[in-house]
Image (cartoon, rainbow, N blue to C red; front, side, top):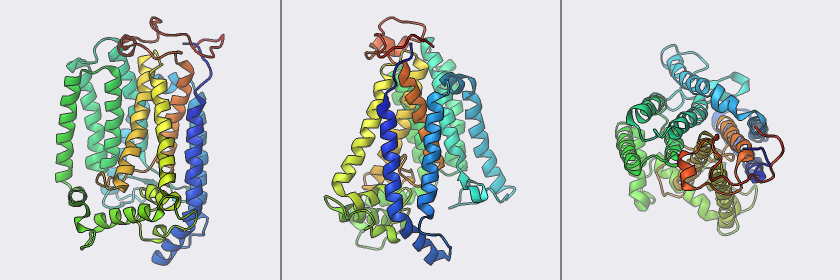
Length: 415
């Protein structure tokens, strides 16, 4: 397809979400710093968390721009396998370095080794590299099999896919004890499989196997079982003795309820002073509910919905199956984070520890989600004017031009 003007709405929505996250962090950062200073004797200044979030946002913007202009074939074809295997290797080496060698950069946090600590430079979560690697590598693999008409082939498609994803899930869910990242990986792959045209019977079988595996992961991990039991109890233990999980969801509901229709206003959060755990991370949605109220939360969800619909718009118009699967994977990645985070904060799902994209405090997740969105933004330059037909969705690659409408804002230069 010939290059044309990209879908600038994607960049607009990313910018608005990053700006909104900075505003909230500026408001609740001093409260978080004072809490840590009082509880642990640390010496954070009032602007510490805002400054860190600002740096993370700038890096995310750079990553978005980098992958928006770097030729997509460099990522999706030339280095896709290296990124995936590199992310997988880093996750394994991190656990080995911490659990066996006891190296200082692999510090245990809540019984798991998930972060590479870089001293004054912060930390890196290698599982985010793994997710990005799985996105670009699996999109290429499944896109090739779909163009060959072998997407439903057990030996050539499903078995290699099961091996690669089984190894990834074992590393992040079993070794790193991070079920949230495992769910994100599954959302990326399932989104790709649906768009690639996997048969519904096979898809249902895969989902059934994944549900059974998830139950095993939950039952064999006491902390996950506690979260599920807290969720199943609902409001029955709110007025009684609360464990950490029930306390968390109770405080999240109080934060959202306290905001009312219009919210308490920027800088007036009570729950951020220490009542709500992870107020700047996984619980940022509840803090935003307290700050901006019901109308504000609806606006945030509308913004995420618009971003996700833009990704679907792009995916439906890409004639190359590999590229379409990249955008579908980004949709599954962002969508799973939004859905699970909001559901957990409102009591509709168990707590999973998944951050809200581009809003929660933390740099690694923001960096790689922005990179994925930047890649999707670049690919929006190569869409057709109209959505592809059913035949084009499941079988056409970039070498075929049938059933593809003219490009909009096409330039004279072609790729």
